[in-house]
Length: 261
Image 1 (cartoon, rainbow, N blue to C red):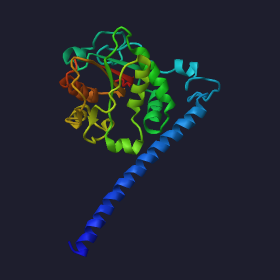
Image 2 (image 1 turned 180 degrees about the vertical axis):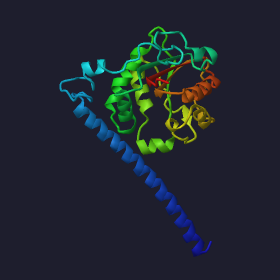
Image 3 (image 1 turned 90 degrees about the horizontal axis):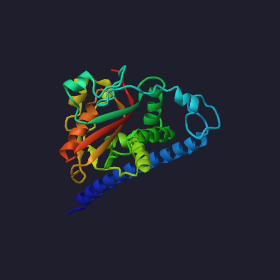
Image 4 (image 1 turned 180 degrees about the horizontal axis):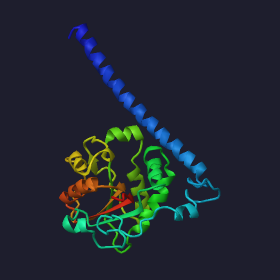
C-alpha cells in the first residue's frame, strides 16, 4: 500500500473516530442536562408546580391536585370518558382493541396537557414521580402484571431529549408494585412521524412495523403497557399486537391522560 492509500485509510478512520466521539459527547450532554434538571426539581420540590405555593412534599399541592380533571367515569376497555362507567363503549363492542383493559388518570385538558408537555419536552422530571405513583395506585393488587413495558421512543429522539418519559413512569411504578421493567426489550425501529399531527388512519399506517420485541418470549405473561396519553389508540394497538405475537397472554394499558374524542 503506497503512502497515498495509507493516508486515505487513516483519514477515513479519523472521520469515523470523530463521529463516535461526537455521539459520546452528545450522550454525555444529555445526561448532564438530566442531572441538572433533577437538581432543579429537587430545589423546587417544596413548591407546587401550578400555584407555586410553598411547603409541599409533592410537586402539586392538595388543592391543585384535587382541581385536576380526574377521569372518574370511563369505558373499562379503552378508557374513553363516558357519562356513566361501562365495561365497554359501543366502539369497543364493535371492534375490541387488542389490549384487555385501559386506565387513565385524567382527561387530556388544561392543565394536564401542559403538565404532560412539561414532563415530555421540558425535563420537569419531578412530574414523573407524581404521575408514576398515582398510576401505580390504579393497579389492582390482586391482579399485578408479570412485567411492565414502557412505550419506547426511537434512538434519534432519545438522543435529542435525553430521556424517555414513559420509562421514568414505568420505573417508578415498578418500584412501587415490585414488578420488573422491560427496559430494552421493546424497540422502536423506525423514526416515525409525530402521531399528534396525523388522523386516526394515518396514525395506524405510520406505525406499521415500527416496533419489534427483542426480549425473551413472554410465555403467557400478563404485560402492563405504560404510555403518557391515549388518543386514537394506534400506538397501543401496534405494541399490543407485537407483545401478543411475542407470547403475552394479556396486555393492559395505563396512561396519564385520555383525550375526549
